Image (cartoon, rainbow, N blue to C red; front, side, top):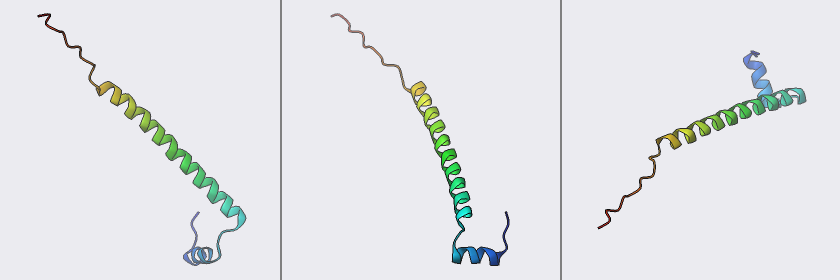
Length: 65
C-alpha cells in the first residue's frame, strides 16, 4: 500500500490502529521466521561443508625398531 506523505506523518504522530498494529506484527513475525529458516539452512550447509573439508585422522605407523 502506498500512503501520501501527510498520512504517513499523521500515522507517525498518532500511532497505528489496533488492526494495523496486528497486521504489522504478523508481517514482522513472518519476516523473522523467514530469517530464522534461512539461518538454519545456512548453518546446516556450513556444518556439512566443514565436515567434508576436515582432514581424515592419520595414523602414524611405528617403525618397529
